Every structure is written in structure tokens, then in C-alpha cells.
Amino acid sequence: MADSFDRRTALRAIFMGAVGAASRKAFGGPWPQDTARVFRWEQLGDGYAGFGAGGNILLWPTSFGAVLVDTKHNGMGASLKREVTALAGEVAAVVVTHHHADHAGGIPTFVDDVPVHAQRRGVGRRIVAGRELKAAFTDGQPPELDRWSADLPSGAADMVRVDLANFARRIQRLDVQSFAANVTFTTDDELDVGNDVVQMHHAGRGHTDNDAWVRLPEANVIHAGDLIFNGFHPFVDVDAGATTVGWQHALSEIAAACDSATVVVPGHGAVTDQAGVQAQWGYFEALRTAVENAIAAGMSRAEVTALTPDVHRGLGGTRGPDNLGIVFDELGG
Image 1 (cartoon, rainbow, N blue to C red):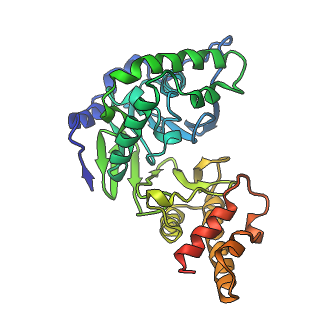
Image 2 (image 1 turned 180 degrees about the horizontal axis):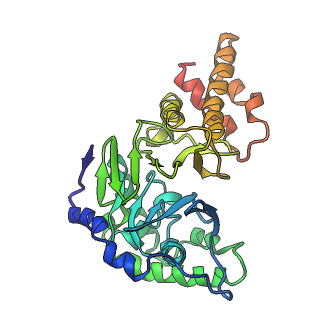
């Protein structure tokens, strides 16, 4: 059920009225040969997955304009908008999978012009994040933003530095609500995009308390947000309401929407499929089994976090011990 955030709720109508904008540039032309891209793009049928400088995004062109799922990291909105417009035309709607900065940081670039959809619990968290980011810019550009212009293709780093400098000059003029979605939903919502719909689902507390996964049923494509970390230890954000049990519940809902041909875009890692959904569910199941056995053997929390269960093998990142401790706490150890 959708419920409108009380700022610019009328923007929702822009999506259905976007035909005029889309007709000006229905699909992007070829990328200029002498211009480096900031992001790496992988074509998925008619659309694209985008990688780098934040969580993975899904970009889908429609007859009403492009639908963009997630917006990369703080300050990366202008760089992202430039590339998605070239690839798929004018953006008609944005969906944000959850409030974390690496997925929602680019919202200020889009929110004044198009509907930005998100699960309602993320709005307050984004407003807090916006307030904190404005404070961080009080003495100039925070140094941590510089890392998003590091290790980029030749030529792209200079473009990103310009975009970040422009963002730094603009940020103090932004209202904190500019960092949050302007259209919200509670459990489920959808956008009619002509021959397809974009379905948005919230299954409860998973990676955070406001994760949405996005499905294009006709295209058979799902963006799972950070409910899937493909090839990495997941981040269980307990401070934002995460639970591994709730996370598995959400994954079960995603798995039920998949068949053998479904393309699944994870929040991090390579594009996957039904097996990737099952693997993420199995990660938590394996941790729970290992921790249950450890508790039964009288092991302490410190001993549990030092375990190296088989499911940890080959995964990137450093959150394996943290996740064992979180499951220990959930089980009342």
C-alpha cells in the first residue's frame, strides 16, 4: 500500500506525464568515444546494471522514460545522471532500495524533478543522513568523498572531481528533505510503465528495516538491493533494524518470484540468478546451524566469532565474525 510523503506528493503524476520528456530523448545515443565513463555498465536485455562508486543500480528504459533503481554514493548523482541519460534517455522515476548512502546518496540530483520512491521507514533515516552530511561539509568537502574519484578510468576522475566540487558548493542550500524519497510505500507498490510494471516490495526487517526489492515481471528481472551480497559477507545493519531471520523471510519472497531464467541484480557483486538468492538464504542458515551447535557446546560469544564455518570460504569482506556474533545474539546465547 502506498502512502505519500507530504513533500511534493504531486510529483508522482510526473511519471505518467513523462512521455513528452521521453520523446525528446527516448533512448540515449552512442557514448562519445573520447569521454570516459565513471561507471561500468552491463547490458541486461533492454536495460543495464551499473557498477562502481556505490551499490549496484538497475537502469530500465520504457516508453514513459527511464526507471532508475538506486542512485550510487553521496555526491555521485550528477555523474550518474549524465550517464543514465546518455544510455536510456530522460529519467522518469527513481526507486531506492534502502537508506544507506551507497544506494541513496544520489537522491538530491533527482528528487526535485521526478518521483523518488522508497519504503517509508527510510525517509527519516535519509533526513538524518542529510543533516549529518550537511554538517560534514561545514569546513569544506569531507575527505572521504575523494575516494570515489580514485581508481576510476582515465579521464573519469577529473569529471567526478568537478561533480563533487559542484555538490559541495550546493549542499548547504539543500533542504534536508532533498536527501529523501518524495513518494513512499509501506509494503507494496507498483508503477505502470506501458507494457510492463515496476513492482516494489517490502518484506519487513532484513538488511535494514526499510529494504525494498524491485521486480520487472515482464522482463523477468529483479533488483534485490542489499538483500543479496553476491560473493561477499553481508552487512547486517542491526542499528537500522536488521535481523537475519527477517532477511531470510525476504529472500524467500524473492525466491518465490524467480524461475530458472530470472536475472537478479544484487546490491553488491556480480549479476546473479535464482541460485544467488538461494545462496544468500543458505549463508544465514549455515551460520545459524553453526552457532546453535556452538552454543550447545558451551562456547562463548568470543569463541563463536572466531569460528570459520565452511560457508565463509571464498567470500570477500571482513564481516564474517560480526555476523556470527549477530546470530549468537539473536539466538540468545
